[in-house]
Image 1 (cartoon, rainbow, N blue to C red):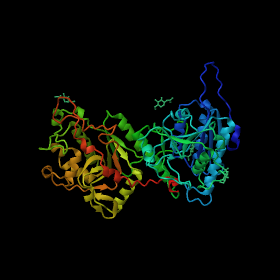
Image 2 (tube, rainbow, N blue to C red):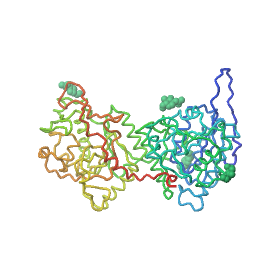
Image 3 (cartoon, helix red, strand yellow):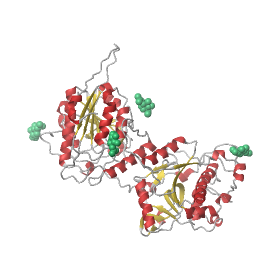
Image 4 (cartoon, rainbow, N blue to C red):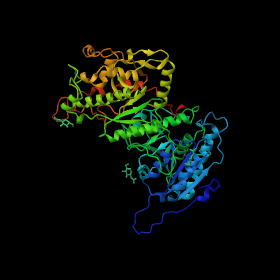
Length: 591
Ligand SMILES: *[C@@H]1O[C@H](CO)[C@@H](O)[C@H](O)[C@H]1NC(C)=O
Ligand SMILES: *[C@@H]1O[C@H](CO)[C@@H](O)[C@H](O)[C@H]1NC(C)=O
Ligand SMILES: *[C@@H]1O[C@H](CO)[C@@H](O)[C@H](O)[C@H]1NC(C)=O
Ligand SMILES: *[C@@H]1O[C@H](CO)[C@@H](O)[C@H](O)[C@H]1NC(C)=O
């Protein structure tokens, strides 16, 4: 264990000794400055990413400070340094003894003047250490910035730029650079920002401000004049470490750059000053899930004890995840996502359309609804769609057999909205309080005419469901399962996402509806939706086991890719629907 007063005693200078005569120059030496405060939720991922940087540790020093914690940050850092510190050329450990908050602080994420000053002093200390140690560079990286790309540090040092930041992706429009700054030192909107952020232009670009994660060359011209604290004598801009540093760069004639030609990693969108660690953790979990879908995923350090997870079913009798055994990556992604949200799911092996042939279907009593055609392509049912129907059907049967009062059903390609778990729990609580009689609640679907849907009185997050596609995510009650089974849908099969609207009498096709009676399913939907598909038709990574499949009665074994996959096209209205995600811009954006 490393103890607090040791401070600089732990300067284990072990500069690289090269025994061999091979004349490959050593990589530049870099100090990694770690300043952690109340970072328990992101530290395992943050440290995991630092550990995995493809860079010789003998060329790296760790400068690590932590202060004013109300969570387990100090213990986690100690544990990590004790496990990995000896691999690095030097370790500086600067923990603050007593947990405390700043005077005037409104919450653990509120930036008071004292806090800004303290942070600037710490960064200055790190900088002073790096100079004294003779480092070529110092890397500042906030503890909720996860550098999933292990080439990041190599890439940045190879650029040989005075100040350079790897552009980081977040849950929103927010990133770690500004393209413009006002004469007073505030954020200025520019036309360059979005093309850069969205990688429509790629490369390394000179910008007036980088922050959160950036590499500073200590050898560049003017670098000796860079300071965080005290600010430059002529400084009149806002008292904030990132702006102080941007000013110092400008005053010293040192240029800053943002590089975006690779995906380097992620940054968490900060919470508002009055919000607590719980909200920040919710944002961070959303970011972890985003990384699982968009890749590369984050990985935790093996050298830190992560806060324990206690998965539950959130009051449901089961949380079913329908997943094809031959799509293990999707299955794993769903299980990992649920684990991060502490939801305990049960995998149901989906019925694989590939395994179905006419004789199997006959033995199951499956027959097609006369006259059924896909609304877009005009094709008949595919084997994939039959398999999908049978998978959902098996869950309804299990509910009836076991008398399960309410379940959550998820397919394996769900992208969860921010705070999915918290919002769903709250909704189900409100639904119970209002004694709403419900059979099915969609959490994710493609609405056909959302503007016509009626709100539910007393339940602001809910509407009466109109005609919609998809069976991505829904809750079902026992009464609902019984109604679906009683209509004997296998004998007149349509795709399951057409069947449900028939059963709540919202399907536009009267002929289909005639085959089912009574169509009294009480169906609702959350608004905004809590889940969307991970990919839409046409996206890279899109793959559909129902749309790439042969007709249900075709035993020739050939696969057909239906051009009629408009059902899974991105709906621009959906993007509007998810804009109420409750994410806050970085407090520094509000300056
Ligand atoms: C860096 O990451 C890539 C992709 O995840 C991986 O294949 C490679 O082995 C890693 N390299 C090192 C040195 O860890
Ligand atoms: C705090 O972290 C340490 C080291 O990572 C761990 O051993 C301990 O169990 C954690 N305590 C709590 C309350 O999470
Ligand atoms: C501060 O501003 C004054 C007046 O503009 C100028 O003369 C002086 O050189 C500046 N000081 C520094 C350190 O740049
Ligand atoms: C249909 O599939 C079943 C199970 O996979 C198989 O036993 C049977 O031989 C198949 N029948 C035909 C006609 O291909």
